[in-house]
Image 1 (cartoon, rainbow, N blue to C red):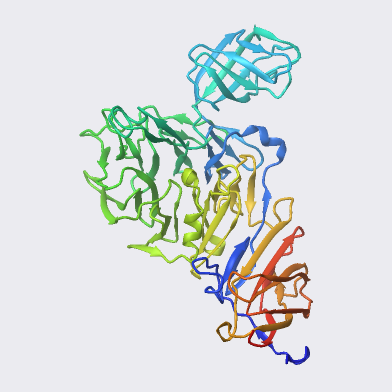
Image 2: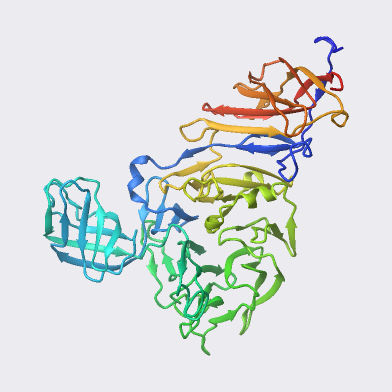
Length: 618
């Protein structure tokens, strides 16, 4: 016979911090098994911070492409700025608008090259041998003549109008004006001046198949069987040169952004530097710029080659008796250098197979290189990050690693969940980030459920408490707070630049969060349990007073793993809710906590107690 409702004793449910997905729902007893927008601190779960858009939507048309890199700086005048590299170009922002700082590679001044079609917003531009790729940005400096009856590309010669192109053929492309032409016209427009920016890259890695794809004599080349050959997406690499930036678009030239005059200054291509590169870093000890995955002085490309300029001179790259420029072919077992990160006073070089440590040694050699780890290659260009002297990375062998003098695998309680649900066709988009306020390392990654192949989920490792949590959030890039008061991040739309950890709403929408426990039982599941109430304990995150908002709590029960689940709830709960009465029977119980706040009401969970007693053996 069950005890009366009044005399049932309360039992505190103690769950360990973090999320575990390496066990079954019953084997993970005492843990949380799923979470979204939840972090754990001091042994308890709480609501993660929200975000707010930093730049007004009226500026949306001033940035193009999917972001692949976000960095920040302060120039010599103390002006703070963000550097954003997308697959279509490079942009700067002081967080009030966006500026196109992509280098202009050529200027065309001509006339009557525009054609329109009535009912279409697209204008055909005819330029012989234009050499552009899809998505390349063109800036219309001057084009005041009305075409198609009602379209003016740029009536103000002092301001440029920027358009991404869609290539038709070698001699023509279209731009979308957003205005429907009233009439058809051909070879018109009068005088026009166009600035053509550095070529856009691909948004996604594509895989070409069939005979002859690949490099001559290499994989899937001549006399090789049909196969799949990846054509990589456009990524960016950048590093500070004092208060300026050195940047490289993948497989592209070295670019220099001089911010001393203004952050609106356009980048320039360093024509004296190697022209095909993957990664750039600056060695601050003696002011050398280093390029990784580059070509030698004869022009032969080597994905494992490292070159550096002469001290203080990023236009001098050819070694001679009067400079200290140099190079070093990394003797790696891997096929390419994938990531380079500063770690304390050294530089960590990760290939797709191993880890090398680069040190400044001076003299004729300038830099020394030592192997530091094998079979620990990084999975993607931006999948490694340094925090407080330790390097963390996501590997291509199904492990997470850290390096702080030696390589160590990170014990991960959500390991298989991450790797089993990773979109293998888009792993190049993985982006590691630091949230230093909470000692967190984050990896944003594309899951197999991503609607657009972009990052839609995150996994977080807490470096001080050493636990993991997971969730959903569409972020392509992230930069920790410091230059700006809050961390910055961008979604798949480049104008969606957010202050992160800002309030507790999802911009203008409610911030939905979820937390689910594993199933738990008593007496090894030999008895049926009966629960008739629970007593929640939730406080306001700011001051631990009783929670001012409302959460929803559900209870689940089942007799056996895989059996029919009985759910009670969701029950609305506030900080002043003393108890919630219910009637629930089963061998195994679980709880689920949900919140959806649109009023900046963050919560923190304290004790959670249930009145549970034996109710028979069946």
